[in-house]
Length: 309
Image (cartoon, rainbow, N blue to C red):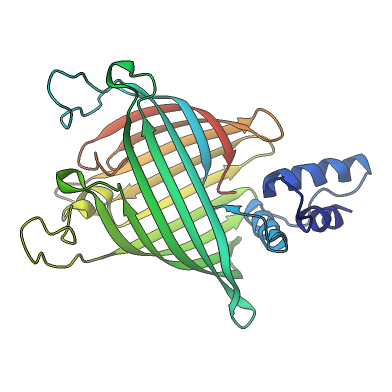
């Protein structure tokens, strides 16, 4: 009953439901009929199952990273040094939102294994309440990436290695001159699950920027010290409850003399069938590229429309 409903809705070209909404609709329909409401054991396996089904619908885009809108995003300090003196300052409260989508380019790149996907994530910091400065966008980070993912079912100490991937990642703030920030990475990712507990580890290698050919060469390195602040890896531990999801993400440069990194803790909870409440706290370096050398402490409250799992 549940699986048939999934197939029926995801193959419908006229369906405007997201993958998560399709699963919620079919789970509710199955419960009303007294049938099981899922076909996989863990949250990440359920997400992968939905992605496989959505491939049948050529009109569908998949969520990649969390998609959210935070109308309240507070930080005690906002760096206003790039503004013209006397025109005003950035306010401590702004709107932060993220849009993240992906599309499967090749399904089964190597035989029946390996999915090649293109993804884009845009994260914006909008001074919407700053009428003195005409509500400018303080920063937007653009992150396109090409990702090759292999599903897996290897088990170790009760954990299942659900997937492993390698990706080519570019991140930039789209600016020029002294405010330009960008870097290119090769990112490895491994994902493990045990019941409701999910573990994600992402080490990366920064691709060196070319040597400058002339003064102010736009292809030269905008931020040669970025690894000192954003580190060499991040790792996320997530607990997915029946209603609530809690996560903790850490990042570090692995340097003993001047140790830097960041930590983010978050919680999402249901508001409706389609929207979750989101609360997160960030402390460290690299919340945005423009301020990657400045430590920030930020509290955000808002809405999430899709998550990692």
